[in-house]
Length: 145
Image (cartoon, rainbow, N blue to C red; front, top):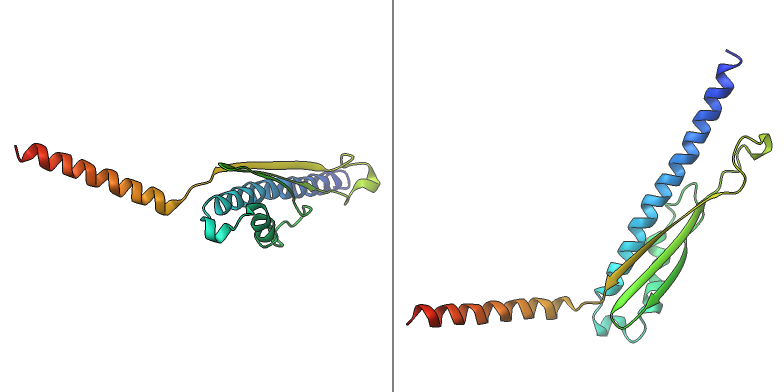
């Protein structure tokens, strides 16, 4: 028992740290995509002239305090006229057992990226409605012959 219990304890701690890593990676992917999507859906009145400032303003609220076992993400962003590009990185630190030289040196860094096309949802809906109106008019003109 004195040989098995430390091995089981070590495996459990390693598993917990690995799960922190996976949890942080999943949450980071979700948050980065949501930030890119929200920024891309802004119309010009809401976005003003600076989508970057808007994005940095909502990033803290989106990241929140849910990165348990991971450091707060660092956001790298680029906004062009047509697209929003985001990349964020965080790391799962595992200093719990470093004093025993059982855990790897350093930390597990992971990142996520997202890209979203800047769109105007109202304009797209109007375009689809207009295409439907034209198709309906063509169909009615052909059927009335």
